[in-house]
Length: 120
Image (cartoon, rainbow, N blue to C red; front, side, top):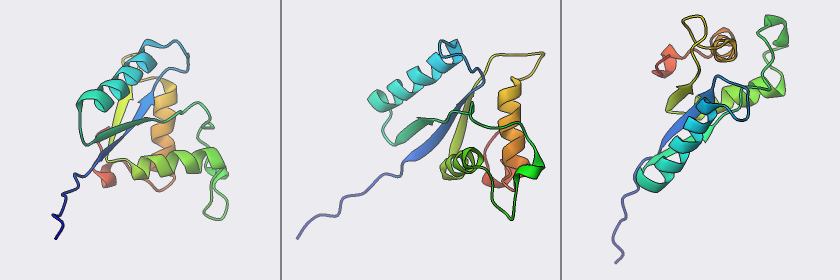
């Protein structure tokens, strides 16, 4: 008789960087978080989600309930996540426009952060 092995649920984290620079300190923080979580935190998986391919918000992009491939891929990653990690430089007392645009795309295209119990 084999003993049942309890499988720990994995917490999936989508990590968004507010800077598009490859050498961004914020992107480096995300890389470090991914490395640390792999080495020291069982049950957590952090995935970097690139927001650079996202178009600027334009509701005309929705055609018959479908969206451009970059928007669909982004929405899918957000839906799959249990949590979101933002790493963004401060810009005019807020996050950068790229992070703001990503948030707007998610909320306008029928996917609200608040209905997913994700903090913004």
